[in-house]
Length: 225
Length: 246
Ligand code: HEM
Ligand code: SF4
Ligand code: FES
Image (cartoon, rainbow over all chains, first blue to last red; front, top):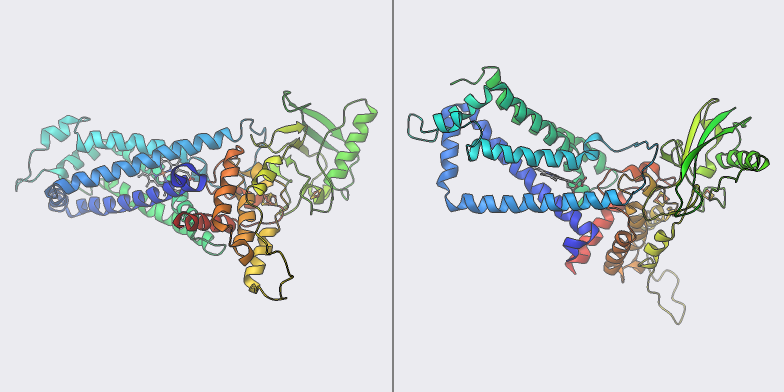
């Protein structure tokens, strides 16, 4: 109860689910980067994932619950925080906080919207079926041809732009989130906090560059069919 | 120097307020911010206008009574300085100053720049005490406290309860104030007995009073006239985890 109702308890849930989501994002990035090896890389990776069978479903359910908790408390805490200042200042100067910190709820909701689109695109194959369903069948050795699907998708400027835009919101979210979570977990002190703020920004940039390198490489023709 | 003031005027908690423009003429750079307001009030009274209501007591930066938001910053632009210790040399001739009360649901406006900070007292009441041995006087040096621990407690105890942290926080959270009070006791042996209930009760009292939740903007530390550090918030979070484990 303390964990789900108190101020710090709910913050701890945010921090722990946020930490797990960051872990997921990193593993996802690592997996995706196999596209740079070519069709053999990413198609084999996708095949391995599907071979896990029920484990994939357990993983999906856990991930969905983490996401759900994070979003639920994110919205609840944000609403409470807004209610805590019913009359706003005519003039307010923030000195210490960052754009990323001030926009957490918006970047969070943008990430949610993107995640839904992303699933419709690559998992459900509902958007752009001419790419995902038309080409999907199988590659030369009979695996799902994820590689071709990715290349044909990101060759479309609009799709690449959506992905890059979404990664900008993730960049902002994590530039605050990664240091905020360690402060919430209580592991920072006066000396380590400024260091963690830098690490968080660096980590957010690495994740950003890592993810956009794929659509950008495909748009530039560095990765081809 | 001459200044233009835009001051929040509000007759009572339920009334609607608005910014009114006043001129502050011939202000000495050596006068304090509150002395400047005193002079403006003299002018207002002479002109038959209600003087601007603002809180103050010691005027030495130690009691925590004064404070308003000056051009968007609680206690004004000078770092680690209460409004009463702010001097007009911080400003230049021709400047405009917007003065607003602390804005938080938990701090209803009493009049003009004066807000009711009883909510902070309620947080203290909910856990800002320790159990004490009664009976015979104990031995001197019976309870040893290391120098780093006593320094840490003293740093937390620097908080004068002004509420600037709440005013500065984008979430209207009282987490810095509450954490300073929790941390100053959590680090001392005298505070150990109630440690678990204290962190739970005080943070609950904070939430119940209508303050927001901390999301680590660190605006509180930047606004605090006593430089109370957000490391005490991390400490409070640790205390909360310890209390959960009990
Ligand atoms: C891949 C997805 C996501 C990742 C990796 C992520 C990561 C994080 C992290 C690490 C934090 C810091 C937790 C803390 O302050 O203790 C955080 C906070 C937050 N997140 Fe997310 N998040 C994600 C998605 C979302 C979504 C979909 C929302 C939708 C509402 C959201 C809303 C928030 C809010 C409101 C906060 C609190 C802001 C704060 O404490 O400063 N996040 N997130
Ligand atoms: S922590 Fe600083 S800003 Fe907050 S009440 Fe105490 S002295 Fe004022
Ligand atoms: S009047 Fe006492 S601190 Fe300013």
